[in-house]
Image (cartoon, rainbow, N blue to C red; front, side, top):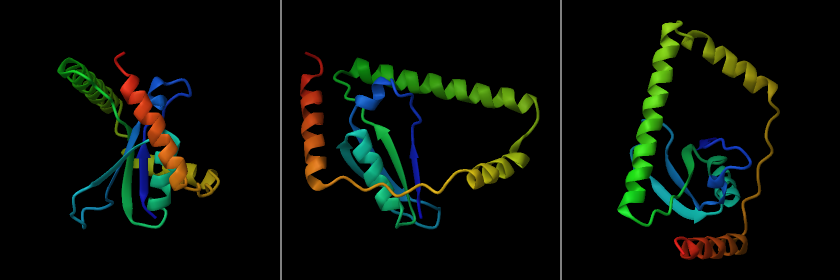
Length: 147
């Protein structure tokens, strides 16, 4: 079984309506190959497809939104926002270090949490027709952007 990584978003996040991509890559350092990027998909389709693949393969799947930026300024704005978020995260980590290193107990806490959670049932991947319908909706969304 592989690993699936995605953003944990609130139900009202505007990012949920964006197109999403899946990047498949090696799970460990032993394998070296170029990642495979698939999409765009609607988020539920991306998650279901990624889950179906990593359920049977030792792969990592990263499911993330595709930001349809139309100008260099929009792209620069997204880059600046990502840089600020990374700086904020680094500051939070530095602050956490002031109060001690909790790495020793985090593994135990994760193991206990995993034991308490029920085993998730596999999600049925969308059919070809469902994916095609989603692609049509994404195309309409992308072509209407900026109007």
